[in-house]
Length: 347
Ligand SMILES: [Mn+2]
Image (cartoon, rainbow, N blue to C red):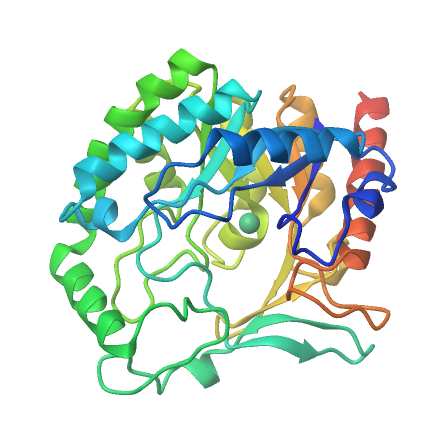
């Protein structure tokens, strides 16, 4: 496996010098942040990213994310133009040596949480989603400001998007995903890039907005749209793992054996009785997922893709982007290294 770490560019309080000091660290997972979703990334920015990362002894060969604009997901407006731009971004990433591009197909909102700094008994904080806090919210009638939601949309724009997606429905969203994949995957194949779709987080509809990258049946359907290793998964254990019905170990084993996992996001999550969930430390005993069995499934199926520790807690007084501090993600990386070494030597 290729160990990697997400970095948000020069504005990230976690420096590349620090990331480099994590044992076994290989690649930096980043993106170009000076262009709006839908636009074309400049060659200059990509070259500068590559140089900056390499000057710090790391590789820039994996991207997260090239965002998919709402028009593509809704199949309206500038969808055609944006798909062409997306292809160009794949080509330009490949030019600087990128081998894997992560993206998601989640309508309107990326991950949904109700608190970003919920304090645990040990004083650490993490992201949580409590149904108790969600259930009375209605974005069509109330002004909603959930943490982490894209503040570039006004409330009326959010309402318009939500009704457009409700009208589109799941099958409409599948149709638009199909159009997108059939256009971009051949380009990725040509360039030697693997596209890795991130599951919806959490993997079920919120506020009646359709979500489709959610469960084994739907992942099967997605992978069949274009049956190629260039059309692969970013298998995020924490996202899929917050639906009790998902058997994450089974899914990892199955898709890794098929060589359809390009990127692993490894983190743990604790599911509550009512389906609420809390992000936890990476260790198996800290949450609902068996990280050892997940790693074993990867090793036994010969996985050689990218892995990164996903969201960490905030610990030791660190401040910064919720989920993306240095300390707990570095602990996660060390734990992942240990699991892989043990599983590989056991074989
Ligand atoms: Mn993830």
